[in-house]
Length: 455
Image 1 (tube, rainbow, N blue to C red):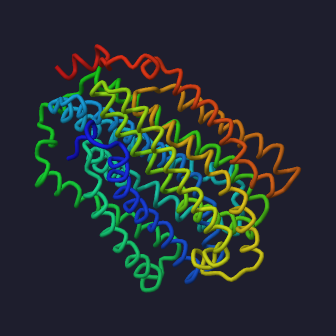
Image 2: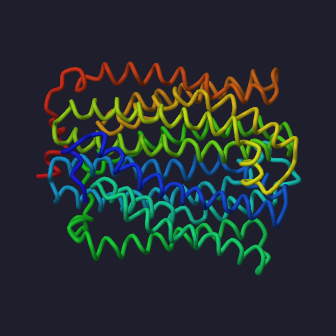
């Protein structure tokens, strides 16, 4: 466990973000290994099938993961306030609320799967494979949720190294299982999904064993699992805010995916490859946002608003340094990286990916502001502004799907995100600097509901 309320902010950001970055890289390896192995051993149609369902995955599984991450921000504030009994109660409530929500989402998503895929304009040629892949992923949603609860709670108390180790083990396992299911068992694209879930299950088991052996102080007692309405309400408010934020982003991506699917398989494959590269590049910015959320949460709980502001400014500057490096890599190596990710040597696909990446990455400086400010607002308990920024993103993507894409083709898709990021940056910047706690720098005082729960 690491106390994030003391010491150099810059050093804390790096120490917190680096293991988280490496962990997320290995998490991303799940998807990249699926894409590469599926593309090389099954074919281009299989890549399109996986890509055509990625935004649906983001909406549903992303909401659940965002929900549990939001729960853990309450845990971080309790830890910053040095209230360990409340930390344990909050962890117990993470599990209760997370499992209940996962069960409902799994049932609902599987019942509605066919209409959802049809609404996305999934081509008939890849529909069976797309359905096979995403149904396995959605059916195992609770596994993803359990890992996210364990990892988020460890991060809330400053431990980012342990989840990294478990993800490395799981990622290596995932690659081996991909090859086993696809090459030996001949299970097709759904085998890659099974491999992902089994690997995630392994990481859950390792997390649980580690917490029991090394962090017994975080293990809830039976009494902690008695549902407290006030604590559950506060956690669900925080979790729903972050879950909706991610889900609204995903809904925007769903709308965009529907527009993209109309352009045919070549564009679907190219966009899938471009998004895989984008995910790798955005990962550093995302983990800096996560670092900001947790550091801001602990310092907000400790009542030190000046450190919250210092964290936001320094994390944003680090994202700009990273963005400059990404622009250089993009302009020099995108064709080679596209071949590496897809296993294909299709010149049309490579050309489309290159066009997309060269335009998008120069706008990552704006994206850095969006990610850091949005996560920091979540960390200090602001629930409205992050959702409003996501609504701005949703409205922008809706406009692209219904207006720009039909008029400009895929170029309308390419320019959409940077334009939306600019609008979100304005909303989030104004919201942060006009936030009452940030302006007054008053010592944080938990709401009465949290005081009574922690007492």
